[in-house]
Amino acid sequence: MALTWPWQKKSNITDILRSLGGASSAKSGAKVTYETALQVTTALACARVIAEGLAQVPFKIFRETPNGGREAAKDHPLYDLLTISPNPWQTSYEFRELMGMHLVFAGNFFAFKNIARGKIIELFPYEPGQVTVKRENGIDITYAVKLKNGDSIDIPAENMWHVRGPSWNGWMGMDAVKMIREAIGLSLATEEHGARMFSNGARVGGTLTTDGALKPAQVDELRAAWKETQGGNANAYETAILWGGLKWTPIAQQNDQAQLIEQRMFQVQEICRGFRVMPIMVGHADKAQTYASSEQQFLAHVGHTMGPWYERVEQSAEVNLLSEKDRAAGYYVKFITAGLLRGAHQARSEYYAKALGAGGSPAWMTADEVRGLEELNPMGGAAAELPKPTNVGGFGRPDISPTE
Image 1 (tube, rainbow, N blue to C red):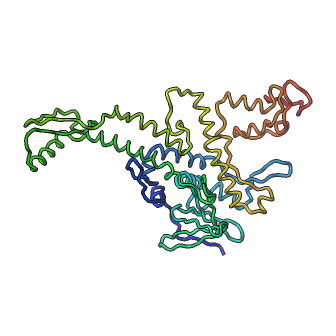
Image 2 (cartoon, rainbow, N blue to C red):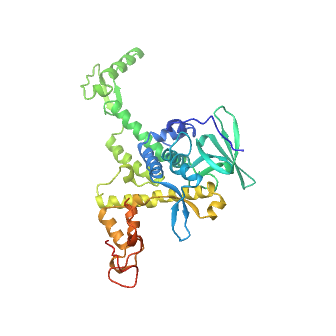
Image 3 (cartoon, rainbow, N blue to C red):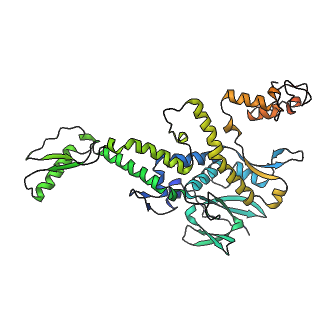
């Protein structure tokens, strides 16, 4: 019998991340949680880059055809769930974006598979903090889900889609926020230091000293008067008037000595390393960056950052969403990333020319396939067949050239 969950409600991302775990202090003294990690703009940007990368490209189920090609399996029950809407309140984009946020911050994504008559009819995502994974006998895995009313229910593995991030034990993804806690904590600490510096008028702290003896009431009065006339941005750069032999002695380390700006810039790179995201993707570029090198880094991001995530989700979907019968019949799921790899017009044109057999190399694409990558309608006829190379004979059709 299929399980349904009427208590499922929409949650915003802050509520989701708040529920994932408790505070953990870094050596910097900052409390690092999923929620405080969101306050670090680099961590938030890294999560968004990966989550939006999973959400923005089409995610479809395909079927292999007898002639070795493929076609969209629009008649499969999973097609609409993956491409349009997996449940009553989420679009496919929102579902996969949420998946990415959970995978990046918590290392795991859980979705209940509502199965009726042997078919998956809905996918309900859980907050990672709701789910406890239990492994028995070293093999059997079950999922204990904490309900909104405080009760817990066990879900068998066949009713749970569990996407794991990088894992140490093979059945649970590792918590990225905990693993890079020190880098995030140092960013939080430097952010707070900068904020407090400017809240005090961008001036360093120090002491007021005098050779005379002050009564406690005088000390309190002096502290209040100094704070009122010299504290905060509103009083920045005001002239301080000292009386009664008072002397001002700064004791805090100067920000240029602490290399505050350099430290904050380095923390951007550290957090990007932890999430395996290129700094340019979060808006951080060095002075030697050029348009050409930036373009190559964008393409490398698709291949080296997003590529592993695409493959991870694709394989997980095929194992958890498709049946053995589906896989035997040639069904598979795929992210369509061709649009992200287009590059510049010149580079794309050169690639297409080679694909169509320019320079005497064997063609591996038809003109209609090239048109499809450019979102153009097929022409049919000779355009649907492999063209003949431009300077050799005996290959392909003689009546079509790569430029047609």
